[in-house]
Length: 91
Image 1 (cartoon, rainbow, N blue to C red):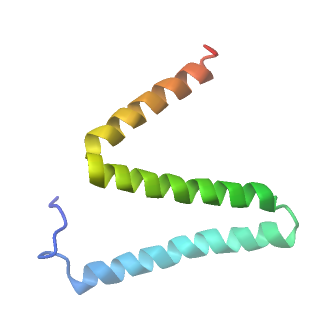
Image 2 (spheres, rainbow, N blue to C red):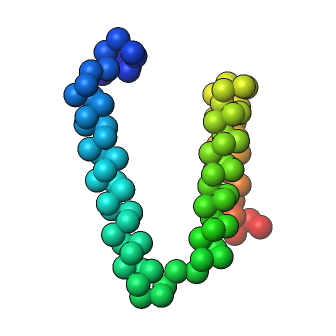
């Protein structure tokens, strides 16, 4: 499987990507509407999670661009070890 470059991305690749994003969006919108109409959404937590997600994406992408992927790999490794330790009851 080859890597994607500007030279080998065709309109068909773009069309498939757009269709995929459309289906993924529908998979998120429809269940969200169901939960909203049944009053099962805690808006405060949802906003906090959305802000945290946006900040994490921004920080991660900037770190990857400015420091390289080795920093991301090291951070991910540490995060996985800490989560595994917590799940195993080590703290």
